[in-house]
Amino acid sequence: MAPSHDLSRLNTYDLELGATEAVQKHFSRNVVAGKPVSQRKLDFEHARCIWMSLQPKNASDIGQATYIERMYGRSDRGILLRACENTPLETTRSNLNSFPGIAAITSFTLNGTNELGVAAFGSIFQIGWAFAIGIAFAIITCASTSGGHFNPAITICFATWQGFPWRKVPHYIFSQIFGAFVAGLLLMGMYWPQIQAFKAATLAEGKPLVANGGPASILCTFPNPDQTNLGYLFLIEFFVDSYIGIVIWACLDPANPFVAPAGAPFAIGLAYGTMVWGFADVSISTNMARDLGTRIVAAIFFGREAFAYMNYSWIAILVNVPATLFATGYYEFLMRDSLSQIGKGHAVHEGGEEGLLRHISTTGMIETGAANALSGDANGSSEESSSGKRRLP
Image (cartoon, rainbow, N blue to C red):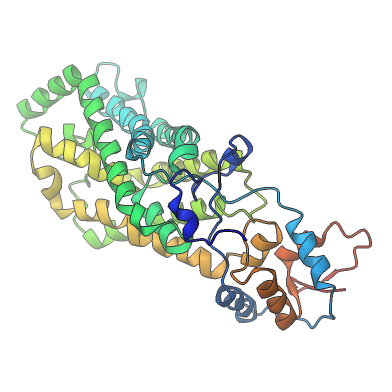
């Protein structure tokens, strides 16, 4: 008898839920089973189709045991990734995530007074690519050991929707913030002469050190002086974080045929890049850990104003969490196809095969996603209706 979902968490070397499934092909370690799909969730998703005017069709009986065998025999990807309580791994992940982006910002900002001009050293386009590729490389490098959450909001979403252990959440969040903090310190050390010269020039001109375009903005986000409407800044941040959150959740959905595990890191990175290109001029943060960790560094070198400036810091630090929860919740309730995950072998019903048989018998149909598991039927006897359902042969 297989160990229960909760007991399997006792093995700290098990692979855990995270950002990529490619590691399963390269490691022979125990893999924690994904959170079982509850009957309540299947009933909700079945009813959801009716709410969306997808009327179900009746269907005749099927050889249930044959259907189950076909479904579980077509597993091509698993739900994985290791949840390691060794916090330096996630610290490294957050460091790799933050460093390329803030380094690009530094190059862009410091060379604003250079005789060659900022165009010779960077642009918003370059900064967007630095964040995108940095995030992709960080996932590729660390996802196989820490799960590659890289963002406290993503860790909280995994715990809320996917069964990630809540007891590990504080460790992950601390590691992510500390990783960004270390990245900020490294940046200050590597660019110390240039930053000190820029600081002296800023003070000589009577400009504040903590402001958008000032020395402190190298490390974290500050709004423009004319952006005094905090409600507007809140909505911008909420939209940007929601957009990124739903793209991440779509990339991590094993039932999504459009994103291969090897391509997920780059798709997620590009989601960040597109938001930088579209909204950097109106101040966005996108990651609580990156902003808070580097904001602490800014406060150390440039004063407490890094947290007090225009009362903006709470938006940059906190809005990311509810916005990402909203986006992933939207995906879970309105877009997730749990039966398709079961059909492709990526999840199991909480009641096992018997529970799944009862669900199919009760509904009298298979949603389109799960019916894909029957595509190997030589006679093609299952018939798809315009409602997105397939009647059973």
